[in-house]
Image (cartoon, rainbow, N blue to C red; front, side, top):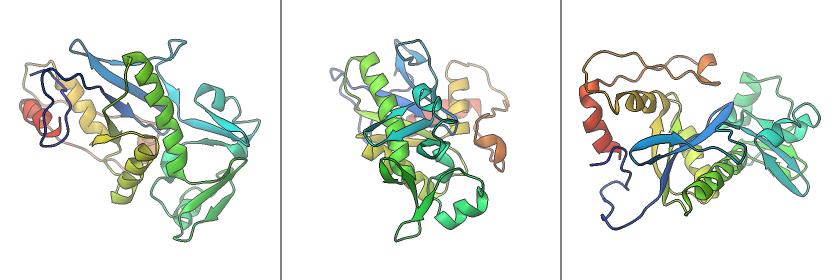
Length: 235
């Protein structure tokens, strides 16, 4: 069986079917999209050879930009340049204002107390902003793989609660993506390390991310001889 052969839970792809899937790291600071080609996992680059996509969206009355172009507006048009939106996912406005009192954005509360960000494009919630980042990553993958994606696996912080995980799924759905799995970030790193390792041992794997370094630590434990079983369960 090919490593990282992704299929929906309980189903397996027929040998003759060509199904395309990608892995997405929807990061606090930067995001990535990757896939497995010829048995090798690789991140996908944009037209300029850049693999990272800054997790930044700049909104205007007529459209928006994502990534490097958006980031150039961070100092010029701060109120309409949304960055690190992952911090806001699944949180109430009251929680956000307590945790991040110095954010440069204007907020309104929705009927259920969730944050709505005031932008030139109107009131936007974190799910919508995250969806715009996911759309940019999906477009990169679609072009690189020359076909539409059948599904994606998205990594999330191990400390994400149910509301934050559901918000991530909602963002993917809004972006037109079918989520095969949500996978904890440190678990994904551990799996990636152990894919081609034939040895057994105790290895410490740490996901050093823009949001992780300011959060309480969460450790996922997986031994090298559990890798194959873990892959079978998740993929």
